[in-house]
Image 1 (cartoon, protein in one colour):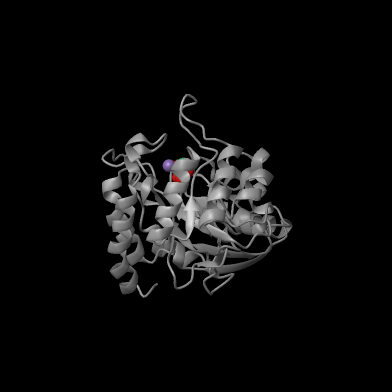
Image 2 (cartoon, rainbow, N blue to C red):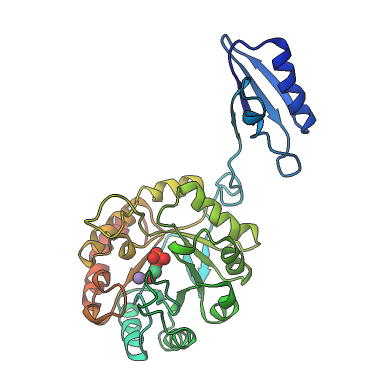
Amino acid sequence: MIIVLKPGLSKRQESAVLHEIRTRGYRPYVMRGVARIVIGAVGDELTHASLESLVTKFPGEVESVTPVQKRYKLVSREAHPANSTVTVRGHVIGGRQIQIMAGPCSVESERQLLTAAVAVKAAGATILRGGAFKPRTSPYEFQGLGEKGLKLLAKARRETGLAVITELLSEQHADLVAQYADIIQIGARNSQNFQLLIAAARTGKPVLVKRGLSMKIEEWLLAGEYVLANENPNLLFCERGIRTFETYTRNTLDLSTIPIIRKESHCPIVIDPSQGAGRADLVAALCKGAVAMGADALLIEVHPNPAEAWSDSAQQLSLDGFAQLMRELRPFIQAAGRE
Ligand code: PEP
Ligand code: MN
């Protein structure tokens, strides 16, 4: 911790602060500047009381207390300098190849899911997305098919060979969802539900943690830390747009998170332009931007008949739209030095 003292303190005031630091189990190193004194306090916060409360305990003496170390450790580049990768059914996320996860927002029926799965696979996707448990803003909207939806996802996997990503909404369903999913998605509305993150991590399946609607990047990294801290090394971060003042788009897709996550963390970064923009007409441009900026995977909503989708109708690509996008993406993937 770095403790900055207020200017013009008496020797007695300074000693009182130093005494308190030592009492709490830290070694203080005093640096005397022209106007101020700065103290470096060395010790372990996990086993000692935090020094952050010095500001309230010594309001006349202590100006600020700032941690030197980052609050997230296991997700940080410092802990693991090389990129880490997550492998699902032979597909490596975070390697040279950009993985495309595609499929409907919600699993609606066997026909709908199978049609989408066959088409996205033919166009080059390797992972099938589809929500069986849906987090809906209104309780009167379609809530998902539940286990029946999971069974359909498993069937689509058997028939196409695609891996499956699907959302886990409740701790209660952790084992059930893990039986069917290759990757567990933690949605934007749940990414600070810490017990859910722990339950997802403990299934042992790879976990994709979406960024919450108003989550700071540090909070998102700390949400990911919950996965690694619960002995699950297979973590993916997914940016899906944040809430801003802008209403032209459903959310504001923050592509700046790509270089930021790559700088701060070794874990792969996935971009979801579908929830990000909420508009099918913007998905292709956002995918190109994401690939150019270093995204490791894309999560794209695709529906055989978007106009009749039971959820997120406006943002889902048609099967032809998706095939066209995959063709248009190719030069961008090559230019980014990826496959
Ligand atoms: C989804 O992927 O369909 C979804 C509900 O995502 P988010 O949690 O990002 O809103
Ligand atoms: Mn959706």
